[in-house]
Image 1 (cartoon, rainbow, N blue to C red):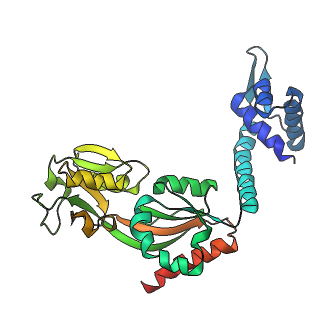
Image 2 (image 1 turned 180 degrees about the vertical axis):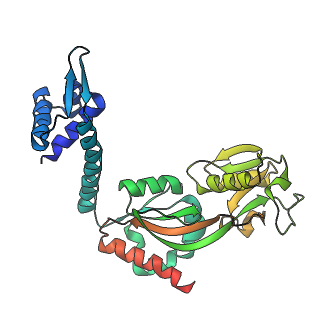
Image 3 (image 1 turned 180 degrees about the horizontal axis):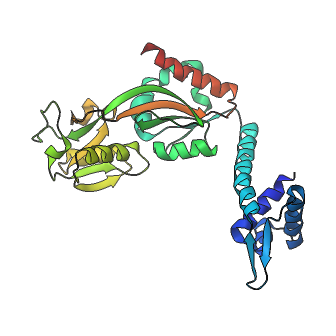
Length: 293
């Protein structure tokens, strides 16, 4: 099979116009026509029919089936090309909270092995990095999740777990509490992390569990901004406990709720990926961190 025929076919199903597909690939229209004929001959099926009365193309049932399989095939071929042509570096995903507050605790171990110089780091929220990992844009990632990360196409090893907490100034009236229910804060405003961070999902869990509608003042992707706004008495924060340090001069108070989610840190890579020796070395050293638990 000419895999280029699949590329043409996918675009033809999506655009339903031979001329537009030819323009998209900078080829002649007969090239697209012959590609379709080769596929129909190979499978002995009509994949696309022409409705001359309406001057439009109709994708047959067989064509729809081939389209779905073609999407998977071309995606896997792209992953193969990316892995085989990748340089001897590791495309490494690192979310801001993990990068700022957890990674420094293990960086010396990695530096001693010489791995640090081979990391090409991409920083983004865990949800965005998960998508990049699954698409093949990155090789290995340290990801945060609100509970165990489970996916049939991923190899996941949990490294650490931290509770989610309310973050407040020392003079807030609940700052000396050993634990509070979310409803206890009433309409005190919240400064929260936005989409792309697992904190949003965890916060929604607490709100749904207690059937409350928190007053959300502001959302941001900047963890430092969340803490600065809390320091300025503009509201409460909601962060994994590891993201708040003594230098912040803030108080973390646990939330009271049974079976609540935790901020879990895991090293993750695709199951169908053949890791380079450098990436294998990185994963081995990261997974070794769990042996002391």
